[in-house]
Length: 119
Image 1 (cartoon, one colour):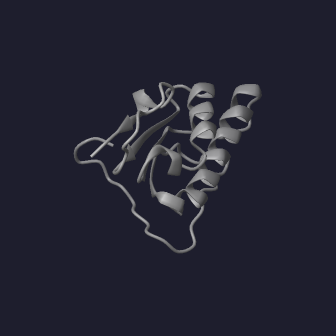
Image 2 (tube, helix red, strand yellow):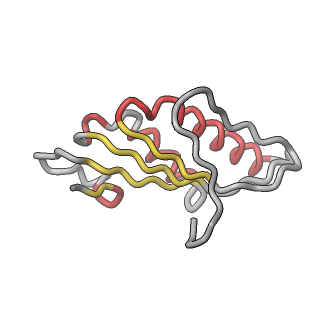
């Protein structure tokens, strides 16, 4: 998003992301804390699947980018972190993530360091 961008915000409840072929591309910003990552991780996997199909053949989907902001107490509580890093590597520039930890007391592993901010 940039200054003056229009965004839709949804907190909790039933939600999904199911773009149809021919829909205009949208850029997603997903914000999760702790175990709240579960439904957003499903959306992230769906987007990755669509990107994979798009690269393999024309399926009519026009996809934007996904930026995930994910916060937890420490890196050990960041669920699916290795899967998320894998998706970022598979789809550079299309899927990105910024992890935020609030109570990290130990050294952050080298693989996560570029993507982690602290308090």
